[in-house]
Length: 392
Image (cartoon, rainbow, N blue to C red; front, side, top):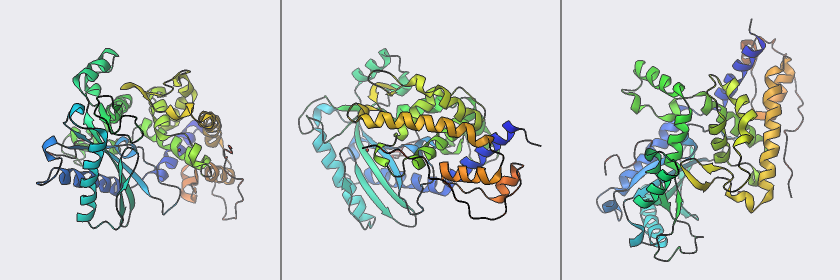
């Protein structure tokens, strides 16, 4: 007989498994990044001489993707291409244009039906096959040694600091001018930091997969295969956010804000039940009162909540989400009536619990019935070699 805590743990495990995407989609994403990297390093590439290095970023890199609410929704892929080139030798505008020419040629060569779209910082490639992907690819330059030293002086470990990049942005006042004052970012450093926060669970999982002969060595195991309590907790938090803001996506808390704060608040819990509840209990401690509100720990001046100062609704939305999530993650696993649990799970996560789920929780299966649920909470308020790189 499962204890109340045991039921809660098993409930969250069932829930997060229903939100996960199949490994084939992760593999498809890896092939997209690899294909672009090979293209940029081919003979005839305008950028080959600058040793382009393509690395995935975002939720596919971090292993925190959740199934979209709509069956026909588009999966967002993100990568960054880093070139060995000095900011003193090229403008942001020229780099963006050169990269755009390569992206356009890539789209033509691969028979893409829609042309690439230029965004403020990146180029977007639309894929139209059995899985709807679009790929946002960001051109960048490796940051200079002086900037790396500055990060080191601010206690950023060297292996993270050396992953900092200078990026293009059409809104930058010196976008078309020759200057070394570019915007900077560190998505690869952040990914390494988040992995460090996963604790020993990541190492145990890597060894397990190697022992099962699914991978030849621990360094070959991709992050999405780890499925650590921290990653699973982030997936649950993101899905709750998606449902709560389905009618107001423009004010929904950004995934990187949730991921950053969750990474800080995670305290080594051994399962997703304890992890997600502990994260919510501690999360607000890591929200700074002054800018940067949610800094990248591997680039302290990079603020994942930089839009909050321009739109007060965004901080309010985050606080409302946190309050609602804290209530829901406490009350749902305590429900013992199968009809009530089904309704609450549907309301908060848009997940349908099956009879076999209920039986595995030790709850009597409810007879088939039409279940009328109240609307989900809504916020109503008036945004060369292996050129594709390792997952670094």
